[in-house]
Image (cartoon, rainbow, N blue to C red; front, side, top):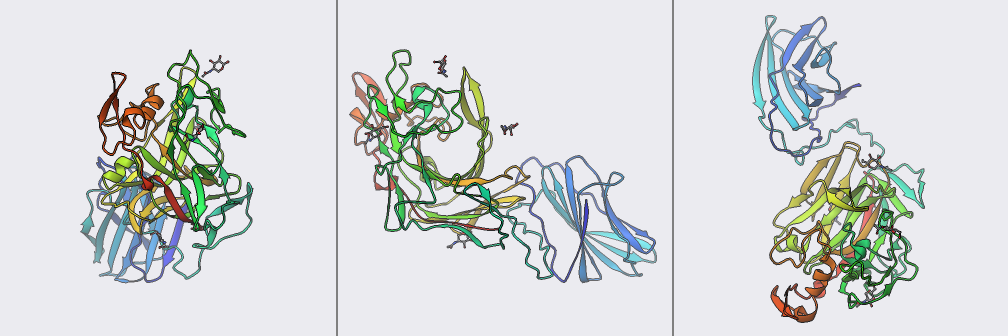
Length: 480
Ligand SMILES: *[C@@H]1O[C@H](CO)[C@@H](O)[C@H](O)[C@H]1NC(C)=O
Ligand SMILES: *[C@@H]1O[C@H](CO)[C@@H](O)[C@H](O)[C@H]1NC(C)=O
Ligand SMILES: *[C@@H]1O[C@H](CO)[C@@H](O)[C@H](O)[C@H]1NC(C)=O
Ligand SMILES: *[C@@H]1O[C@H](CO)[C@@H](O)[C@H](O)[C@H]1NC(C)=O
């Protein structure tokens, strides 16, 4: 496919296409300009890894600028054909070239002057490393002033909405004015970790008001350390089996079993809400004004999850994420998370396959505007209007996603093992070690310490304070 776009007087436009990556080996060679009948050609040789070329050409510093976007090489070259542009003697042609390469976006600018049928080439600027796509702007393809329609798709009650949106149009708003939460479902289940599976965090998700309230136009999700010890019997009424538990003999009840001495009830009670089946969308800008929960081994769920769960590959778009360790190190994270299921003796557990983007010097105190911008080509993350990350989107997330809000604790992949961490990732006894780090001789600890109970050493976690609650003032989704 080849697209030619004639732009009015606007400066060179850049296309944000490839993620920040390391190990750059490619460098754009000088362009070649050839005169051809009533026009000219500009080209560079093809090399493995190049997926797209964008030429911006300016003749004699005059508008219009010639913009050509090429998605396929021809005769092993990336060539733009300017067939009706005859260059006069002394013509000066400025050529800016952007190359989308699997290692990143490369750019170079050359100048070519036609002097008595000779072409004199001069390099103006050549980058020897790919540029940061976060600072590259989008192509302004609608320079003619026509506002293009949005690419956002909305699904209400599982049906695609027929409305066509304009960019920036508000498509979803939750201001938490009523405790009924008609736009949301409340989760109510025990994670199968209780029987030794390692797919999820260390919580029981409850739909009553013990961990969740809506007041003062604010949603509050407050995790609590469960009082239930391993001899407890727990049964959740009306509990729904979450998807992707088919290998795990899902249970709504916890009963101590002699053949599973490692089994332990979920050490933390929490709540989780989602818009699945009520409101979903593909592409948009989601803005959440919220505090991050803070307390040992806590983390927020503020994410988008596909309506159609894939039980071997879980995809999430995290709008904001920070574990207690991140918060202590002034980090904020966000972006796509892809978890792959690893069958393990008939059970499945998940391992992350990528890293989220990380923003530094972030002070978690108080409310923040966490924003994720998701288009068919890019994903950008902002905290308080500051962009801290972006990704290329190669159609990997082209399906309806719904919103999930909650507070998680522990788990087998959100915290790296460390000396002060009471459990080790993937350990069968993780639930029990986590619970013991908050109870018994560790109860009411205000520093991380060790203590002995029945001659057994415990690593303690600090008691959670009022900051353990996640408070959300609003969620807004706009078309892009
Ligand atoms: C936590 O949830 C369990 C069921 O999972 C329940 O038995 C217990 O009473 C709840 N609350 C506390 C504070 O432990
Ligand atoms: C699930 O239950 C079946 C039948 O009780 C049993 O054979 C199987 O081992 C169980 N699977 C797991 C993962 O516990
Ligand atoms: C789940 O995802 C994997 C990897 O992307 C894919 O190969 C598989 O077909 C998907 N399964 C379903 C049921 O969509
Ligand atoms: C929140 O941040 C996004 C991204 O910077 C910005 O577009 C939006 O206007 C901000 N919202 C408010 C209410 O400030």
